[in-house]
Amino acid sequence: MNSAPTSVEAARELLAEFPVVDGHNDLPWALRAQVRYDLDARDIAVSQAAHLHTDIPRLREGGVGAQFWSVFVRADLPDAVPATLEQIDCVRQLLARYPADLAPALTADDMERARQDGRIASLIGAEGGHSIANSLGTLRGMYALGVRYMTLTHNDNVDWADSATDEPKAGGLTAFGREVVREMNRIGMLVDLSHVAATTMRDALETTAAPVIFSHSSARAVCDHPRNIPDDVLERLPANGGVAMVTFVPKFVLQAAVDWTAEADDNMRAHGFHPLETTPEAMKVHRAFEETNPRPVPTAATVADHLDHMREVAGIDHLGIGGDYDGTAFTPDGLSDVSGYPNLIAELLDRSWSKTDIAKLTWQNAVRVLGAAEDVSRDLRTRQAPSNATIESLDA
Image (cartoon, rainbow, N blue to C red; front, side, top):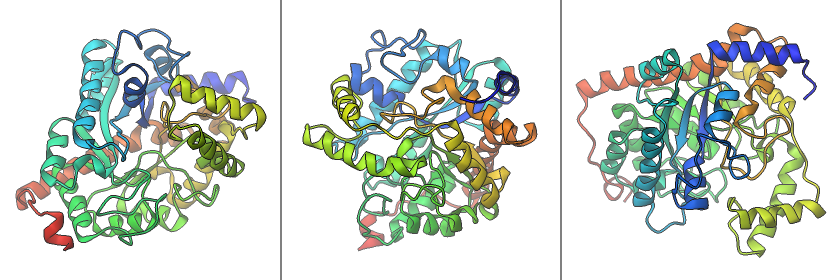
């Protein structure tokens, strides 16, 4: 980082008052993949820098005040629902094991109470609509267990929504997909549009009665990757009230990394690994490839370029942060793990971002959007019964 020490110090002071709400961290999946949820083997009360991007000391160092823990499961698993339940159980085990540091949070008020108590508000987000197996009852069950957002797709289409990284099938949302969005509005679960196709983004914005989020997505105008958000969608966020949370994944923020990643993914498949796998064995393959094919490395300034553009298009009230730590093999220079957020804030301060604007980016916008979804839910629940629609009845 080129930021002066005074900028980093100012960033730490600011984060002490308005800490980071991070929209997406895949620690539960990393714990599954590495040690099958053996929390003794990955005790995050102490540094796990040799294995993970995330542990409590580094969350504290990074100024994290709230974390949406992703309960991601791969779409190719045959039993997505029980696997998601295991992921939720992992988060619950973490909360029970580290109560002095991690505070269970279901609401915006819970987030504020955790901040006042000096604990890290811990929320749950489900990554991928395959986790509900085309069942609105399962969706409600996930909400009852604490899930407060659902990403409509992951890397593959679901039966009712198109993904950004799959061949178009539904053309956006099907009729059942729109019903999923409406039911999420009714129960108070945030609609997360990261990973979805631009057509799905637009359909969801036309359907939703509540603000949406992008839990970990950057700007397509800055890095032309389908996982990123087109400007016409960013322009619609002020009317919707939603929040786009910039991500740090190199292949989504640096154009030179896009082609490199495609080659690295092919290499992983050739060695029998899923491209997203981050087990020690998979990482050896990644590192060997990197030795002979130097990896383009973004920096905190690269991420700040996305935020500058997103602020220009959507406005400061509609930005947040979603690092995707422990869900990516590689990270930017200066943002190598969850301790790095002050480096990004220092970069923004050096670009003349005001403290008021940064407070919105790190804390206030995310808290507001969850509270707004709760308000919509309270209203809808007085007028609408739970939907028992099926995909067969709506998409036949």
